[in-house]
Image (tube, rainbow, N blue to C red; front, side, top):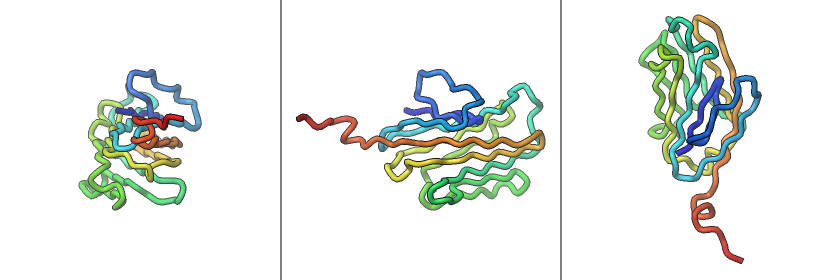
Amino acid sequence: CVVISSFCLFLTPAGKSLPTLNETLDVYEAEEHSNATLTWIRPDPNATPPDWLYIDLSSMEPLRRIYRFDSRVQPETYTDDEFKGRLHCDPQLVGNGRIRCLLTDVRLSDAGRYQWYVVTDGGRNRRNWELVVRDFEVAVFPMQC
């Protein structure tokens, strides 16, 4: 399992420490058909929980929105057709200082650069990250020369 966490958005391999918040681009690897957990951590986790929350997760190439949540129009969320049934987010954890999304069955086509944009009544934050997906068969059964 690969942990994608931060925002302060970091994608962190399981068992590794989180990168610092001042990094501009995080690059992580996941194996095809594995699951990845994406966690946004508030810059000040001790701050009062926000009254409202807006989350926008976009693919940068090609530019398209893959997930949107706005607590002011709850429970309506938007998930891109390519990610429906595979991207599950829990923005309710924002009261604990984080938002967690699970991406199941990671695909080779998921590889690329992404941007998270999170706005609360206490401020806004943007984070870029890149997901590198390894082919399952190549990772498990490397070719012998």
